[in-house]
Image (tube, rainbow, N blue to C red):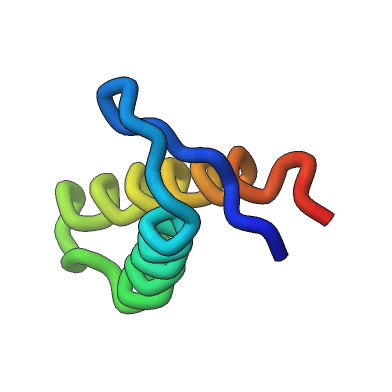
Length: 65
């Protein structure tokens, strides 16, 4: 799998850096399975982070074969 082109503040990440971002997002998704708390705020933050992770993963995997 070729890594996605990721730019941060106009700087293109190397493939190794892009892979690190992809793996970090996957790790965050796994840790979010436990949630960020049982209160309303924790549930809301968990949901928002999960949504953002899905969106980022979708962008990373777009056009990847």
